[in-house]
Length: 79
Image 1: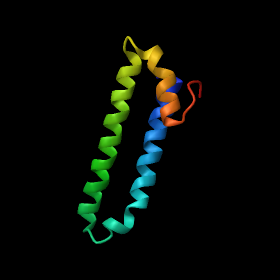
Image 2: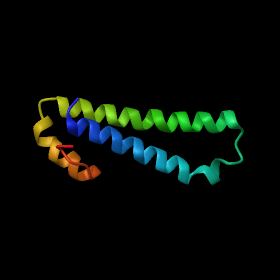
Image 3: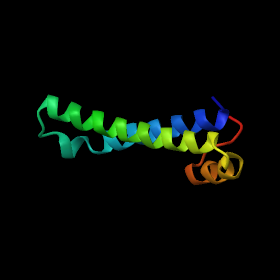
Image 4: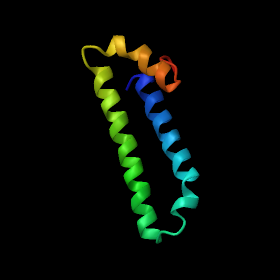
């Protein structure tokens, strides 16, 4: 796994956790099982986006996309 891929996955996970915490008040009335389901869907969605970015970075245009993705998501290509 490249440093950029790792950095993107970490950034996506960070955003996911942050948003789930931010939305706790809105989901506080849900049953625990329903809240867990909402959280699981959010995590799966973020993981799917990260996987798509990784696929593109590993593809033929990866070198051109790397600086764009790094800048877009505020991560370093070398971490």
